[in-house]
Image (cartoon, rainbow, N blue to C red; front, side, top):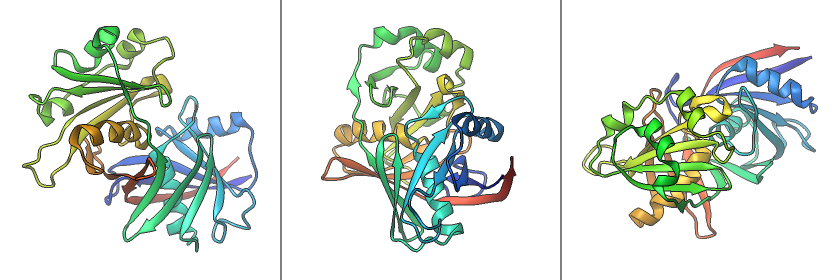
Length: 286
C-alpha cells in the first residue's frame, strides 16, 4: 500500500516556522491501530488523515472525512492539522471548490481560501472561571512564581487556561520551561488535555498583537504544541469578552512562533485565519 503524505507548517508564511503537521491522503479507511502507528512514526504533534467519503477524487470533491492523531492518541479536534489538510487539497491537489467540508468527531468544519490565507469555520468554546487553589500545584509547575490574573477551564476541549497578570512581559512567557514529568505528576485525573498560558498583548508593538500564548499538552504525548488551533477556540472566547473585540490577532510564543487571526462571528462560531507552507511531499509504503 502506498499513501501520499505531506508535511505542512501551519500558521506561518515561512518554512520551519509555525506548527508542523503531517497530512495523509487515504483512499480507503485503515485500521485504527495503523493510523496510530503512522502518527507515531511521523512523531509530530498531529498527523491528519483525509478520506474521500463520497468524493470522486481529492481534486474535484468538496466533502471529506478527517481524523487527527498525536503520537499517542486520537484527537477530537485539531486546528493546525485542519489548516494543513486544506492546504494540501487546495495547493497540491488543486481542488476546484471554493469551500471544503470536513466531517470530524466534532461535526462539520468548513475551510475556504481568502487571498493568501485559509479561513477555518470552527466551534467557539468559551472557558469558565475557576478557583486557582484547585490547581495550585499544577499552576506552580507551569508558571512558577509568575503572578496569575485568571484561571479558566473548558470541559469540551478539556483545556485549562492561565492568564498571566498584565505586569508580566512577553519574555517571561517565552522563558517558561515546564517539565512534562512535573505536569503529569500534578494532573493525573484525566480532566485536563492541555494547558494554555496566555497574556495580554503589547498595543505599542508592531504588529500590535491582542494576546500572546503557549500551549502545553504532555497528556496527549506532546509537551508543547506550537499554535494549537483548538486551544485558540478557548482563547478567542476569553479574550473577545475581556478586550470587547470580535477581531483579534494572536501570536504564539513558542520557539517556532506562529501568527493567526480570530474573528467571532454573529452565529456564535469562530473563524480561524492563517497561512500554511507545504515543505515536504512523499509516499508512505506500508
